[in-house]
Image (tube, rainbow, N blue to C red; front, side):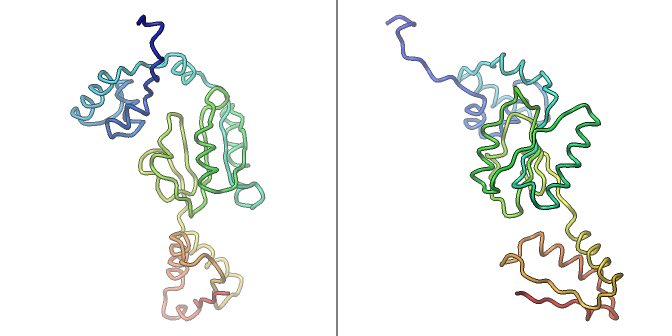
Length: 226
C-alpha cells in the first residue's frame, strides 16, 4: 500500500505529549522552546516522548502566537453587578494606556460555560484572556492548562497553570467594619450568605473580628442569618 493510500494518522499535539509525559502543557512548551526552569531529568523525559511520538511543531500556529493582535479578551459572568462593571472599566482603561483594545464577553458563570470560553479561544483575534471566576468555581488544573496567556481574577488558586489575582478578603472585611463604625454603627450583622460559608466569607469575617478585637469593641460583632 502506498503512503498516499494509507489512512491519515491523527496529528500528535503538544497536549498529547504533555499528557503522556505527565507534565503541564506549559512545561511541554518550555521544552520545545528550550526555556523555563525544570530538572534536567524532566526535560530529557519530555524530549524523549516528543521524539517517540513524532511530535512536530505547527509553525503556522507558532507564527500566529508571536503576532500581537492588539486585543485582549475579558470574560465575566455578567456586567450587571457593580463590581464586575467596575472591573471591566479598569481593564479597558489599563489596556487603552498600552494601546490595546478589549473584547468583553459574558458567560453564565458555570464551570461548563467557563470551559467553553477557554476551549474556544481564538488567538488570531486576541492575545489572551482575563477571566473573572465565581468563588465557587470548580475548574481543574487541566481546564486552565492552555497555550495562550491567561489571568484568572477571583480564583483561590490556579495550581501554577495561569496567573491569578484575588482580593485580600481579611483586609476587605476590616475596611468594611471600619467604614460602618465611622458611620456610627455599634453592632455588625452578617446576613445571609452561602452555607457552608465559603473561604472568602470566612476571611471577611476574620477581618471584621480583627477590627473589632479590643475588649471594649468586641461585643459589637453579632451574626444573624436570614
